[in-house]
Length: 178
Image 1 (spheres, helix red, strand yellow):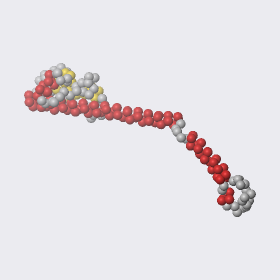
Image 2 (tube, rainbow, N blue to C red; image 1 turned 45 degrees about the vertical axis):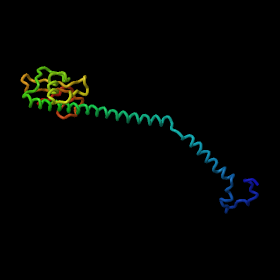
Image 3 (cartoon, one colour; image 1 turned 120 degrees about the vertical axis):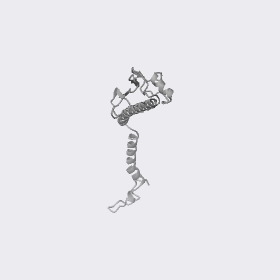
Image 4 (tube, helix red, strand yellow; image 1 turned 45 degrees about the horizontal axis):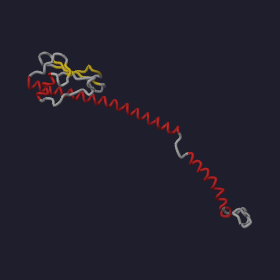
């Protein structure tokens, strides 16, 4: 008999059990439609839509630009810190020179510190400074030195990219003296 031939089984009454209705044909009909529907839904959601991908790419681009903007400020602060360390090294070398010679190197006109200038040559010859400090943004900006004609005072000038260093301002109007 076929699976749907009900002549082999008594007709269902109000006390039918699921076992009498549960036949292979019923299972195929009942679950087959559901499985086909789920299969189609699975095929439809197997990947991402173009809009979803564009939204994710836009979010990543925004985060990347924020991170890059914060790093650019950090680099400027690092260069300013390096400048302050260089100026401090030059000041210490000038103090050692003063102890050895009783005066600072005399340069009555503003001199760019390059290593070939007489002030830096004197500090290097004495061994007070191991190498020539150079502004990280050189040649766009450089350290400069000038002293009075007596050699008892000097001014070191330098530029800063930020205003994060206490008592100094952004720009090239910064000077230190003993």
